[in-house]
Image (cartoon, rainbow, N blue to C red; front, side, top):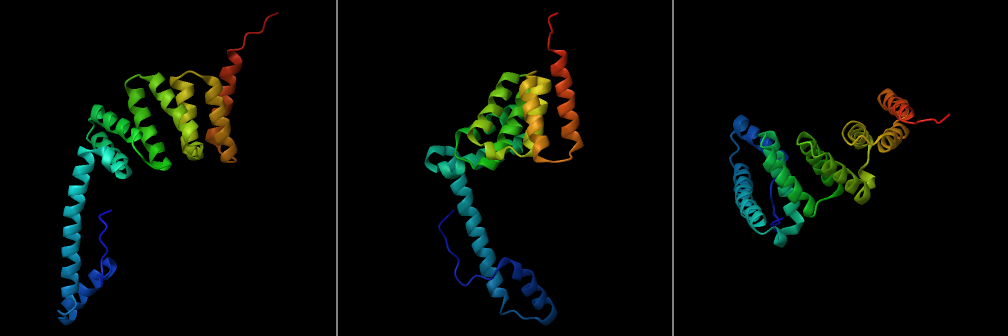
Length: 196
């Protein structure tokens, strides 16, 4: 990210072994490499901190990483249970450039906040946008979440059935999906009015 390439750097995984050799045999020559490695780590950390600060101040200039920063800030605020701020950062993450797998995670967390706030239409719109943009992200876990959402919150049994059935197709012999499909189907049948 900083465009810095390390030359003749000791690999991180060897640092403990070098230190162990120093403790056992008193070899101080190799410790110089460890100190140099650590100095580069500290300099890189300072550079990354400045880069991240700049990216937060002007996300449009750092569109490649701004979305990931917003996602991380959303996660941090979610853990602290400051959901209004988590929501704000998740929404910013969706507007930025992020890979589909992270986009999917942001959608899930943001949908949970919308549901908690009883903004079911917002949550539904978010799920449908995810399906439209990144259908490849719709793995079994996401399909289950969608089925639950449309059954319990959006009250759209057709969509709930579709996603439960799709999840059941993806994971053969999955009792959870099979029960869900059967339950939603029964609900759908109850809603059908048969005229005499």
